[in-house]
Amino acid sequence: MRKPYIAGNWKMNMTPSAGAAFASDLARAAKEAGCDVKMMIAPPFVTIPAVLEAVKGTGIIVAAQNMNDHKSGAYTGEVSPEMLKDLGVNTVILGHSERRSYYGESDEFINRKVLLAIEEGMDVVLCVGETLEERESGRLEAVLSSQLEGDLKDVKASDMARITIAYEPVWAIGTGKTATPEDADSAHAFIRGRIAEMYSSDIAQNLIIQYGGSVNASNVKALMAKENIDGALVGGASLSVEKFLPIITFNK
Ligand code: 13P
Image (cartoon, rainbow, N blue to C red; front, side, top):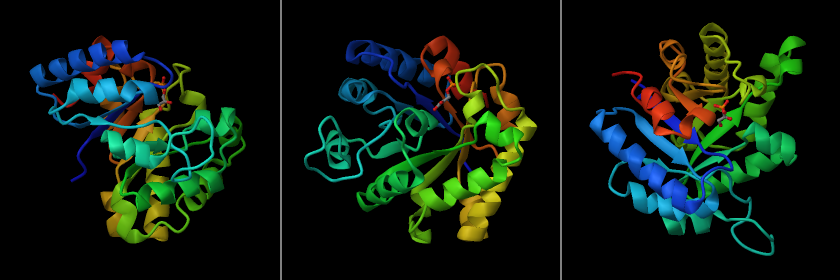
């Protein structure tokens, strides 16, 4: 049984004070609603300490949206996994399409971060997904395959329990255009099949695959009803209790 895993990627939103106030409201609302999913929120780096304090003891996972591919050193403006762990952060989102496209992150670079995160004992939410042009030119499967192979290179089978995959079609992010549940499920089935080939069917069966791209209160149930969709990575709709609560309680 794969437990539903719902995550909120706050992106570059929420100051430390706003984030702490929102996180305590969210934690309270989730508890009152009897929320029964694995829940994660990923604030910006500087907002993390205040949010950690606000959700202490609630079971809500606080993750980082990125990290550097080195343990320490002369990398101005960067944050290392060791710094995150020192705060109590053990989960990191890597390979988000905004980092791939705006900051030129390659699969090779993402792979170095994935390997370092694992070495540091952290859990990873690895984002993959195609652009509209790649989908329309029939390259969906080739793109997903090369991202998975590149990003997971040298990741051992014994470490795969630390990896969650988030399928985020670039054309569905922040656009209000969601993949249909059928399209999302078929991409997820493809990803699971590739992981079975790269590792084993057991590992593939246990792999949590989140869908991301304009998830909201109206489409979450239909998406989550699909066999291969095990969770959601939510952007815009994770920024208010009113919008996020129906998503984290989709199974209530
Ligand atoms: P939206 O939910 O705003 O489309 O963002 C999805 C996303 O990129 C989550 O990482």
